[in-house]
Picture (tube, rainbow, N blue to C red):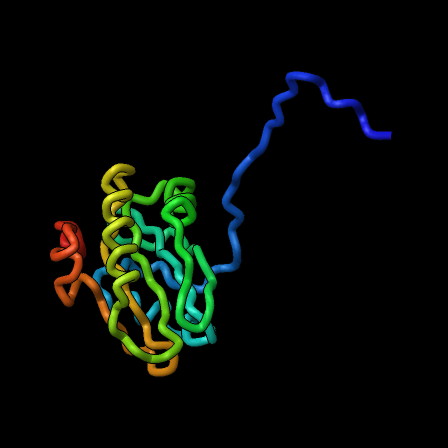
Length: 163
């Protein structure tokens, strides 16, 4: 027999980060190429779009990686709520957004651009900087950096790799 629920009962919940075995080094991230060395192999394993972030300390050291969304062959639904959840819980000062294109096409879609702009705006409100958004071609491991290609600036971001 289940206990009877009290009329004004307020349930208490806990949200916690759970540490998984480490996949990466403790080397600071300074360039998009550093990100590629760190994450390209991981992203090459997926046959669908995966959107993840690297949460960083202000000095560029990686705190953790969080897979925010696993999508379909050519799309991934990404919510800023899911992106910033681990950043806030990790006390991150910045993050790098990364996703793969299983097709191998490195060109950012209009959705990729709009998501980047939205993440920059949300990051400003939370004081958690989006440093870059990197697209990795799944099969070749080549990359497209929004920052290196000037898209971050055109989308309204003045942040980036400079500290």
